[in-house]
Length: 287
Image 1 (cartoon, rainbow, N blue to C red):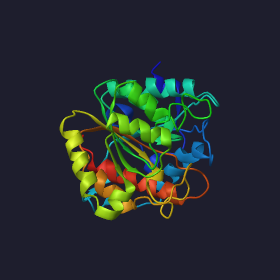
Image 2 (image 1 turned 90 degrees about the vertical axis):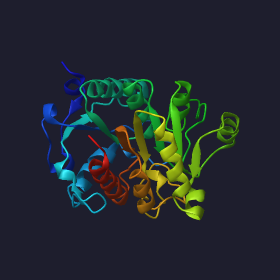
Image 3 (image 1 turned 30 degrees about the horizontal axis):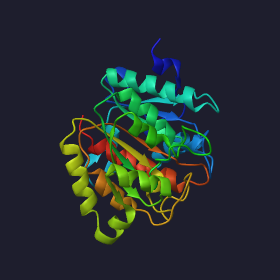
């Protein structure tokens, strides 16, 4: 039995419509897991909230002059998570994404907490460039005694040898600062974008993807300022506007998959923005 049938259960559908799997170019699934949340829980409700929001937005994009409803998207439902077990849940994500990749589908993952991105990246294997839009670097070696959590997963990505560009960061601990200082880290802060505009970030994105054949986008919705997305696991003042974020996403090419994570159930605004981002990407990504 395929993993997509073993571990996934369709419920409410993104945009209210779905393409048969065999015909689909994109395969969308949710991961309703927030087992390592450290501040505001509720990201496990994110996939459902994003789907609900998608059905209440117009699907035509004035950026690309395309209609997201024309994209061939199969909504596979949500991963059957193992509550409280980040490792088993991540293993299921990895197996599903590997299968989707093998079948030639571009994956769209709805979070859920950001930790699950590590599972998706493992599903794609090596030689993958990662562009991470996030308020936080998530580069701690451990957090509260946990080697794997929303605050450490990007350190594990580094351990596995992936190339990363981080955009919009504005929250960092001393350990992380020492680490990026030693590593010569590739990043653009939200402060730089606010003061100088998006040009520096755009140039870094273009340079990063020029030397790579496959790009994966991971979008923690907290990259946005809480004024625009207050309903997130770890809100951080001083973030990007939705327009700045979407202007940067418009530059991204060679995309094989993406995720949008950390929407919580404390309101609807972040879910609406997350759904809008996905609609725009469906129109922008080449298939």
